[in-house]
Image (cartoon, rainbow over all chains, first blue to last red; front, side, top):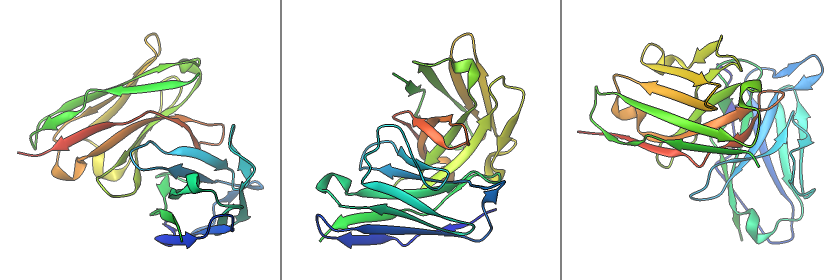
Length: 110
Length: 118
């Protein structure tokens, strides 16, 4: 199984940049695409897709969110951070079954 | 508007069975693969099972293989998860999700809670 590793928590100030990392133990690239996706989950709610294929913004997601990376190293950036961004962020790979998720990074405000 | 509405959860004793349903609307259900993803209380997300758009292919995580069955009724736009021989470790919120073009989970239901306890 592909293992995805995320830092458990991150604290940033309003208006600053938040960078959330996700590292995999296997390459998730295939034919020029990185099969890495990012989700936001607020307390008591279902997850919501933010980014697909490492860097593509999902429909309706503000441009403050961006993703980059390839191979085994990926980042989700939120710039600038707003109060509504407090949530847990998960990465997920769809390169190989079983599809796996990172453990999640809880974003808090300083 | 895409909507996925799960039902069928609740409290069940270990070793018993439960069947979850997910009613889909707002898109052509028969064109999309679907999957169940679960989340144990205070834990992260875990893929459970997936089914192709026509039901011809199914895949399961090892821990549920032989116990869970994913199925669909395209005429009713409904996804199912039959769960047998339930264990305490199956306690979780179960989400119905839709496949995006690159197998991202592009839409999620609100989730249904399953509690396995005596």
